[in-house]
Length: 97
Length: 316
Image (cartoon, rainbow over all chains, first blue to last red; front, side, top):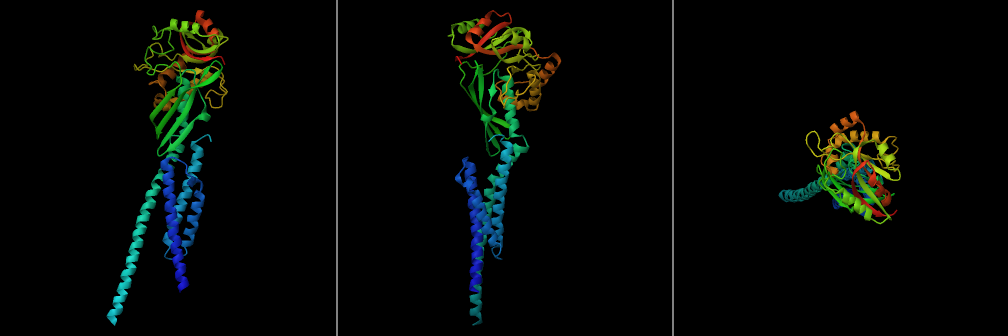
């Protein structure tokens, strides 16, 4: 009973962790784009995406934390699509390195 | 006893709903944040998509590059040195313009163009030229003058004197206006030891520098020397004349933008392309570069009506 409670609690904590990390990542992305400078954050984007994704996936297993998990995964997928679009279109619109 | 249990139950329930309310409030706040923070990255993706599939960034770059080759005498650009920067719904394009003086290329101008989508909203140009062409070209202040035009605003005799007074160890750029229309090949034959770098082509409007609608037009012409640089639109061109006409046609859909990039306000490409197609290519002026002494020796040429001295550099 107690163990179950701890398990549920940790799913919820991971869910919130996933969402909040996702929001921080989005905020940093905004800052780096609006300031016009490449922050070191952009280089670590894959690390951020994977930690949001992993914690979100784990949070999916708890019934109460499922929505949080989906939310986190949503942010991670958005960041992934953003990186891919910018990378691929970047090649198209800038014909030289 | 019963009422006590009920009280406890309702107290627990209130606590639970209170906690749930806090959680749902936080969820609402954070979801608003999430959506708000997605606005800028999404706009960024839309900007990139616009420059990749809408009006292409490379089209804007090519238009800027072509119009300078065709309207600014003796121009070369290096495409590898084009810098592009993208921000929300806008693009910055900056590059250097070069001139051949003697046998070397010198950077003479730096352009900073700011586009919002495909509109050129800001153009900054810094110039290193010692002799700057008129900022606002009019009917009479051009440096290359058609034979049918009256006296230009510059004093040709004075420029020949200045040329004569230059040290022998210099190379110069000179703008020659002819006393008739000539084929470019004949012009090159006439000036054997000298590089003819740009030929100004008669397009039916240069006798008065006015279009059919009465607008002051730009000179149009093309680089004469073979250009093997990778970025030049005249690279591998078998006939510069044909490439010139081809480029004019390619510029036509973007004429408004091209006119904004150029220092000349009107290109009037439609009527000028038609004129060239009917009458062929004849030059009324040319820009040459070479050692001072050899340019000075042209003073007696029957072909030349006016000479405007351009840039002067030490021997190279």
